[in-house]
Image 1: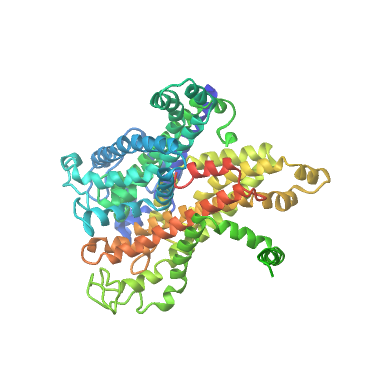
Image 2: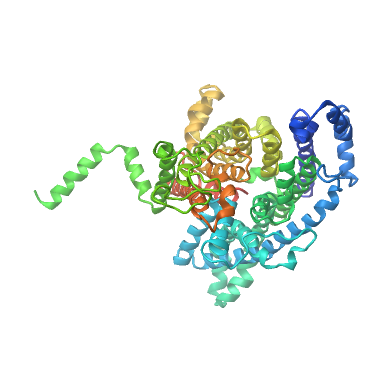
Length: 321
Length: 313
């Protein structure tokens, strides 16, 4: 089992390394020339040469990659091409804002989805369960920005105007200073993650409730609440851990559209801003950061599932499929 | 003729003249989810198919005031530039739908090919394919797709290939499991025993028996393709203005939600209806195939894994 976990960690490192190569290739090598991309149509030979020197575009590719990676690993993220400020200082507050958004989503969304999942499992095939299965089918189908726009239409503009439709704050202000701007983005992301955690909880809970030991426990005459909370729940929660980790990994990418939709000053919106003006160092830093979070959470999900699933303690993860 | 004789005659007629596939189709559409799914999907497909021909205005002509309210002339009002919202809606799904279909077909074909090869050939080929796919599956695909599209420009082929590349590993994982099961069956052993070459066995014996899981995967992947491509459009990365595109329309017109909500509500509803419809159809097909125990039906384990793990996750 230790070997399996170590192998998974090694695969994680390999993935992050390959992502860094891809990011480097996409931003520094492929489009011909980042300097031309930055300067656009207004480029002339002198400015191009100057910017190329500034971006170290005149060195051979492997050397540039080595220098680029070395800089990143020692915390030198470079300066923004737009305003010359250090990238680290620019993305710092954005990291905090995105973390607030995801943290709140997790704190509200996960217990909620698990609780509703257990409820649906207990009321299996009754009306509530059927309604919930339709709701999750709809929610799992529609893209996340559709959920967000739906909430904006209903709660912030057309139907009622209870909440702000955009979540902007003045630069340098904490998003927590205006809690009402967090409501819609968090609600959107909660609805986005709900179907996955809900379904996993419901399915595992049904498996547990159907098991022999649950029947034994109920035959012994234990009260239903104790049956569910003490005997069933712990066995149903462990498989759910993996889905929770995968959900957060997915959110590392999924927040981009939601932050962009609400104008929420997090990493995702920062990425879209940087893409619009082709601010290469910002793009690199944010993509690598989001990608690393994604990979780390994926590894965490796999390690968790190896630890809690006896049959995965042998063999490779995909063989258990 | 007595009632009993009449019904006997009718059932004899039914049995003789209705082909098996039609009876299967009837059983399929007897499910509520299938009817709803088919109706919703068909409605959107109809809009996309005939829309450009029935539109009153050109989608890029300026015919009214910005965010003008609905009128007889413009039933859904005008958008941010004063273009007819209805005309733009009618031609705004073509690119999203055709790109999603192309990306799904490419992704499912490639993933199916890899999965069947891995599941049938086993051994070193299986190891090589699945290890590589393990790495690809661990990639933060959405973020990388965003990066490549934004840097390399929004060419249709690039988007289709990127989305297909995202799908392939997931499809391969599911199809490999199905192919492994089929590869252990007697008829495959027999075909192997009488010396039929591996390629022919894969095409003639394995493929027909993994059609079920392939279709279910295809449906799930199609939903995800639409979500991803509509999302890229919404971010302004799939088509440039003044193109009519539901995703792009949301982005352009959300600023005028209070003045003319239709410019946002209608495109967003169409995206939602399309994805929900395809999802319902996929779901209904999956449970129908399992219950009817059709040849090549996806196994319950496939459905369960697909339901929980697929989609954007």
